[in-house]
Structures are given as structure tokens and as C-alpha cells.
Length: 322
Image (cartoon, rainbow, N blue to C red; front, side):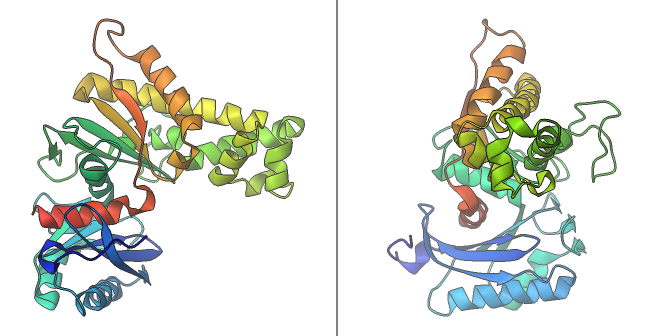
């Protein structure tokens, strides 16, 4: 729902740049989206992606004044929050977005990794509001991450911190798109959930009746969303798949807790739509594998609240606080 308009001096623009769509919106300083727009992403042409961003921003500023622009991009963003060094789903290589867009639009620009932007939104306005030590996982095709320590985004010396999906969790394991093997996202992502369900439905179709019904009888058509649907009806295979995914995620959380010691873990991304179906097994495995368990405070595991809007809202708020 569109929020009531506030004075324009309270508005910033957030832009969430994905491989298929560009979502943009005017956001007030309470994290509420006043008006939004979207464009398709011409992912094969960097200059056309910039043109689409400019067009969306100009639409938003045609009737409102904004204090700045925050861009959330799926890729490696340098420590100056200026350049996208590499984006796996876009043709961006050392793309100097801030400089170019500031010149074209006449507004200050902040560029941020999309998972960092989503994490910031959950800390400011969502499931982790009021917390200063938080790890957010955005679990979809892969695993993205954002870390907030002492109220500040952890970005690292080169801007590349919190790429948690590429923790090596199984030596010489499944090959990852990053070029390595055994990365966490190969076992704990939405894609891994769907693959597990496809395999189990093929081997044990009688136990996956509802899951196969939703998929039209074809195991290879099963998606993560279908697994969630089936699990809610009590489908045995779908529930087992969530238990398996929860084990992989819980083990990873225990390792992150040993290093970062957050107060809260937040599960976001597409898998978070499963709610308690995923939170409960994740928390159980996390507690089982936590070092020093029983003799230390234990972080909470929560489900993200802002959904698909988190990246846009977080990017805008980072522009507010640039």
C-alpha cells in the first residue's frame, strides 16, 4: 500500500537493480514507500541499464524532490560505494555508477550491494529493528548476506564483506558458479531446496503426492515455492526437504556466530516465505552446533518482515544517511 505523502525534504529514492527488473521508489525517513515504478532490466547492455535507471528516477522526481539516490546492485561494490566491480547477472565490469549517475541526474548517489541494502532495511525498519548486532541472510537462488555490527554495516576493506554464501562448507563439494566447490549456497539455498525435492520426488513419488500434483506430475518442474505449498499441506517429502535445508543453514549460522557473535539472525529472501517451516529447523540445528552452547547467550533466529521491498527501502535509507 502506498503511504501518505510526507514533505519532499524527507524523501530519498531507492533503486533495486536485479537481473530481470529495476524497482525504484520514493521512500520517506520512516521506511515507507510513497510512490514506486519499475522497468525491465536490459541486462546485456550496461549503458541501457543506466538509461533505465535514469528514466525511472526522472519519473519519480517529476512531481517530487528527493535528497539523494541509493542503488542496490547484486554484485561486488567497492569500498567507496561508487563502482560495481562485478555483477554476475548484469554486464557490469568496473562500472562507475555513482559518478555517471550524479552527473546525469544532479543528485548525490550511494551504490550498495543489494543484500547489504536489504539487511540495512531489516535493521532499521523490519525484523531486527532496535538491534545493533545482526546477520541477515537473503536466501533465494543463492545465499546473500549482510552484517551489522555496532549499528554499522560491515563492508570490509575492499567493500566485499558478508559474501557468506561462499563460505566453504563442504571441501571439494558441489561446484559453485563462483568457480569454487562446496560453497554454502550449493546446500542451503532455494535452488538447493528445489533440487532436493526433485530428487526425493523422483525416488519416492508415493510420499510426494501433493508435491507432484502441484508440479503437474513432473519432478523436474518442482520449484522452491511449490515445496512451501506442499509442506503446508503436510506433504512428507516437502517437510523432509525443509528439515534438510534447515540443517545446512543452521550449521552455517553456528559458524557465523562463532566469528561475529550477533544478537539476531534474520532469514530473508524467497525462502523466508516458508516462515516457521524453515525457521524452526534452522534454529534447532543452530543451537545444536553452537560452540559453548548452554554457557553463553544464544542469538535469536527471526524471519524477515519487509519481503521484496527490503532492497529498495534499504538503498533509499542509506541515501538518507550517506
